[in-house]
Image (cartoon, rainbow, N blue to C red):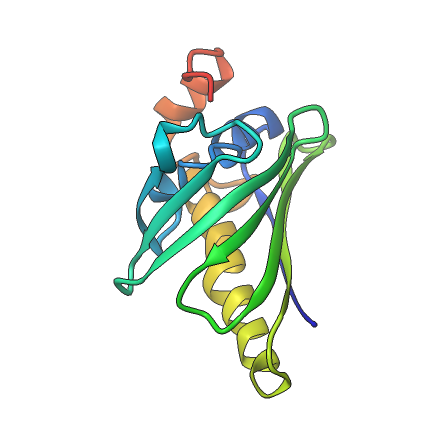
Length: 168
């Protein structure tokens, strides 16, 4: 079984980061390796069981299904049903936590999958760096990399903090 993990601190309040990260169809807004995302059968992106088809930056496609979304604990779990990778039973989680003394957010993104032993190490690195850490870095850049950095998307931060972002 393979396992990949990435984490980081995002320069924004946890509510603001969660409001963006929880959007099951929202990866194209901020993740550098997702070009587009469409919900299958016009499903609501926050509905457990809903499926998304993502077009990846490399031209490939991947289908994922939302397994759970927990707004109280700020956690999202999805299963990758198909894609360009030689994996099975791929389940990943995104969780965000407040760093209360700084008003910023700790985010972690991790996944487990089955693959032939010969591919596991390379796939772990690819998911860790190419999916999870790339996503964490993208969120850091979106909101400002460190608590001392200026926010790079002030309009979105203000909008979300004011509760004006569309409900997902």
